[in-house]
Length: 421
Image (cartoon, rainbow, N blue to C red):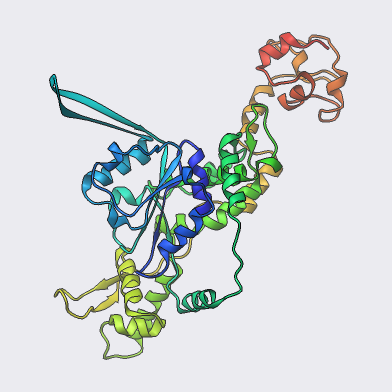
């Protein structure tokens, strides 16, 4: 997901992400590993910055990612405001007054994007205006994941990877065609459930990630008449496997597995004893077989989602965790791969309705090309034998056939005039 998001830097609206989890879970390490596959021209990484450093920096920000290894490094409200503006507007414009030899003069600094953001955080609560601009990836805090990390660190047989071809690949992508068309975008729009306003941004991120995956495979993808790369259903399948749960969790249509397990543990603790009126963080941590810090963070996430309540009103005292709203049923927000595949197979993509409408009032005659019909519906009486073999049942019905015979698609009126068969 991080890798694919970095590829979206080549588009007009890069996909920004935040990696969240408790301290020491490996968030920064994960980002650092992915960045090794990209040239430094693809990103600008910082640990912290002053409020106005983005405005004054000489570093180019166009088609590049800003990387902050901890969101806390974005000190001050002005720094966060600049980043939000850069992500939303694709540029920064900052005007201020400076002292010159001619007195005080206004000066404007402009920094061009588009720019994406990758950051990490331990916080459960984020600025609401930042929340909807980022897709959140949660790093596992499970003990089995910790064991896997131990084994990886202990493995002395790991071979070093030559990263130069990967970096060269990214440079190659940036200098070639990177316009991508998604022929089933209309289906995605119609089949995605509009259950929350933030989906307006999440849907744009979905399209951007599909384009990024198609771009990475552009040498094996077809092109349309404009030379754009055509995304396939396989591109959507890969992206959906990465983003489906993230989107559903973001709009509250489902609950992360870790939070669901936490709520279930609280339910079990309260149901196993008549004397227990609340669950403590220690009990929850023990039942989940995780440390106290991870349990505390899970409880905070569940409280944020309205699933649990801490009835302890005294600061610094032991938490008294009780149940709140019932767990929601899992609900898919974006359509399944099968739903999109069916639409593509029967030709129900974005272009199809417009083409059908164009031709519904024109009478086709066997052996007559649709471009041999004038705007009034009269036949030009010109045979189009070259087209005949390519149409349905020996007839020509669409611009696709016209493109095959005449070189490029044109409006119907132009086609009628230019047919030379």
